[in-house]
Length: 126
Image 1 (cartoon, helix red, strand yellow):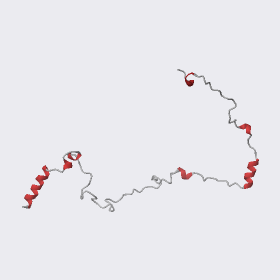
Image 2: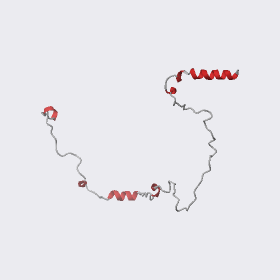
Image 3: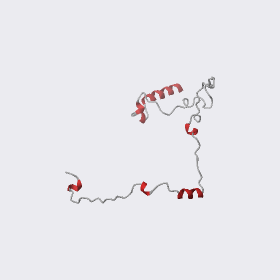
């Protein structure tokens, strides 16, 4: 009796579908659900290694060094030199004149520009 009920339910499942399986991407025969089944999810524990790692041994001179910090050129820079100025040094530097005002260009215009108010079309040619 139980097997007959199971077979009846299985035949009904073939013909009666859920509403979202009638149309849309689920109806395609190539559709596969993104949610894994309980038997597919985590077949083995992540903490257990499936195979032991094989580390090749060779001469240390011929092995490529994968460490980043040993090849980083920013760490090979010479140290930054800083000079601490005392008050006497600053006063001495202020007294020294290393440039003249005539060495720099004059920042202001020396000539006045007059605009033509009678320009045709605001200055643009037609």
